[in-house]
Length: 154
Image (tube, rainbow, N blue to C red; front, top):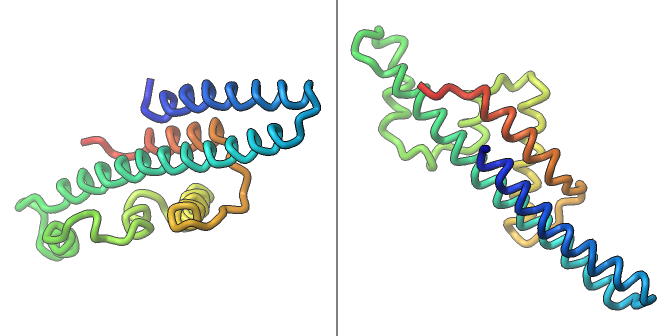
């Protein structure tokens, strides 16, 4: 199991609980409760999305450090390692997130566009806005897990 599938499993349990409340509200024709449960479900989805994103960002950071550490070896020519030496002097969190992603994923690939869209959604939600895209937590968790599996680990 990965952290992404663990989070997805937790989300399923919470989503089932919201679904049960919505079903009861629908059966009893309680529009107020149904609307309240629907709104709570949306907030829950946003929270789980942010939680997934934090784990994805941690995986990006770890992978970038692996790449950096493999590029600053003294046996590598200075012309090849100078950029990585510069990066080594900075806290990884101080490098823009999408720059870190560019180290791992070619910007011309659809996977990069997906991460960029997630990042834009993360910023909107994290700063009090609404991300207009639908949160399909199982799909997002799977996408993140598949991307992380392509990252270097050593």
